[in-house]
Length: 165
Image (cartoon, helix red, strand yellow):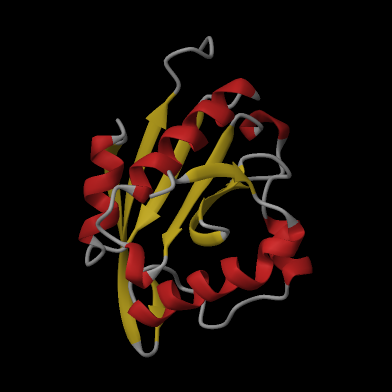
């Protein structure tokens, strides 16, 4: 059996990546998004680096990427994490594998803080973030409405241990 390969996401991966994203949207607790954006929009909203896919036998099983949290230069070292694993591939450690590589790449480009907003129902994501050294920093109550239901968002952050802060 082949090992899982973590590599940089390419534009031509968007078809597989967007299907996995759609599976996350369908759960109702992964994102406030309701539809898959066009690649051009997704591309604009994410950092050019720190875009990864987990691949086995030429099939993408999951992906991770970072988004800037602000356009202000003072927040230039802070990014928001997205990690999505295909429905059939959850519970295999892919999230941890992707997150490990994402953290390493983020530190290599000088990011000092990674943050995530997670729905309380998304227990798998909460567990992953805690395992990876993220700490719970608070809860935004009723921060957004999804299909008529007000949703809370749990905030997690991880400070780099190697970037001088």
